[in-house]
Image (tube, rainbow, N blue to C red; front, side, top):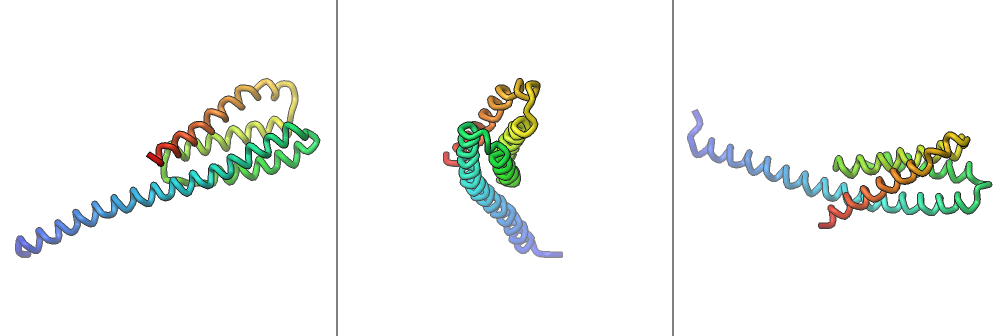
Length: 137
């Protein structure tokens, strides 16, 4: 049988170890979120630039749609370890993908969903911003 002092020391070290892991995990999550937010900001900024080019030069729509598709994939691949931020990033990616589908396939029926799709995607962009803002507080 182990003396009480040894048992107390072992239990104390286990508690400290678990508490330390939790603190380290929180820091790692915040760092991961910060990296994800920085990457997402760059990707979403480029998405905005490409979307602007698309509206001013519809003859190159296919090229711009391809680039938006690549950016959407990059955004979806980001992982922040935060469920709200990851959901918002996925929502932006899905919204942009939906708009790309309209650009590629067109048709009057597809165009009817554009305003709603744009609004949902804008809200998802704002959700990413809110999640990243929360990180800075």
